Length: 604
Image (tube, rainbow, N blue to C red; front, top):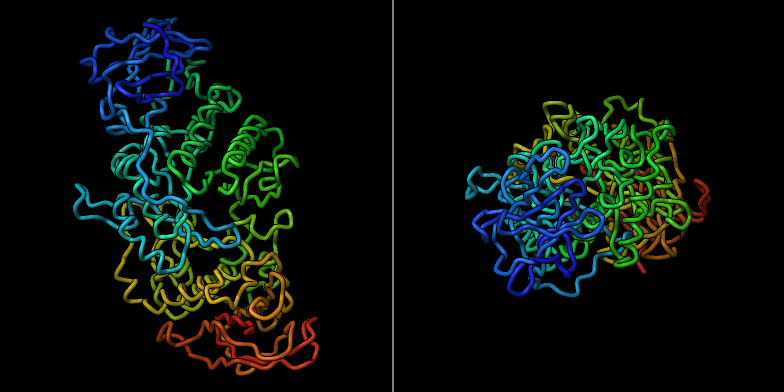
């Protein structure tokens, strides 16, 4: 037997057989055992290549066969049975690797994801999005998500962000403890189940953004640990840092970003999701822990230049191949370098989660004391941009991190009134927060269930309460209306997709704020958003406007049709007169309910 001349890592099917290739530089011998050779490693010894790689072509091996690599450590003689680091499918995280197809079947061709300024993202966790009584444990999978795609399309979102679904230990997990980053969780449906979801999402006009975890691996059921038997001082071996850089809050399993083969492994994984599984973007978990050993911006001694270079390389690789695909960093430092181009010294991400917006808006709406609301802070986070690009940040008030029970957090309606998330203040201020998310500059994101006032705290062990979608159908309609306006559904609010924002009215005394959004400006483009952060209604609130003539009310956040708890403050179209106000050349007066937003624009 001789090394394979075919390319590829892991198990790559060809007509009549499979090529196996693995990196194990401290092994003195490597074999592959599986159903194709009666699990006899002596029948299939792999041949050494250069730089610690081993490969072999096995005629007769086929898709669906289970297998493992059998490695003999050169120093100790220890024999290790290990799962394939590049396995695309596994029986379970502590089971066997499965040879999987690499040429997936697709029925939806020609799909193009929306541009960043048109995206509205819906973040979801596969296992708890909706439970399936037909599953052995009742939990959700890719098929249950697929069954809700029409619902999501009707809601108006045009992208789903899928929390990590790599193979993880057990059946209950957020997904941020990947045992194998190429193998798709078997309990969710494996690689074919995921590809069906992507294919169906595209057919519904929904982009798919996948969540990847490169800041640490495992730590449980992690066959990469001391993969070929080598370790330094009992640490992780060839795939991990073996010094102080190994440490993370989730285990001492930070990959060695400075080792070429490990960098290639992570880069190959990113390209797998966007090229083979046709994802439209990637969300990178906790990038501050990739670029810094301590996950901080204020400790330059902890910088990881290798991690920074890795992120820049992956972003460059994706941009070179499919530049329309979006990479998002969860960095949480609002550091403009994250989204600056690689050529200009940045990391090259298309967007990053907006930490300042999250805390600025959520803190403002959650407080029970109107007098404590800081309108200038709110104005600052609404106007914030990175690198003078409004769409280099993802803006939200709920995400899996911010609403998780295990982190001591809860949903926004629950934060507003603990124990009574359906209270009037919870309904009013939660929908006001949603209005700010969907009208401020940035890529808006909502977390599953937010649109029908899910209370309590999120747990991966509990499904959404879908009965709330009926009980709070008006709140759901409120979200749908806001999303339609954000996407310029009726060609009357084009400015909400534009780069420009001017927070021109900051009333610290009465807790009212207004801002102007526009693309090119003019009818159907200029948009004025008013937000009342106090428990007081106005019949004729005065506001500066950029143009004269008739301004139409596109959204009234106090409309009684959204909830019987709302006051239904009259809010009528208005006529702007030539009278300077708020630095604007025209003035108008409009009804404004308590804890409510109003959106105005002009017809053509």
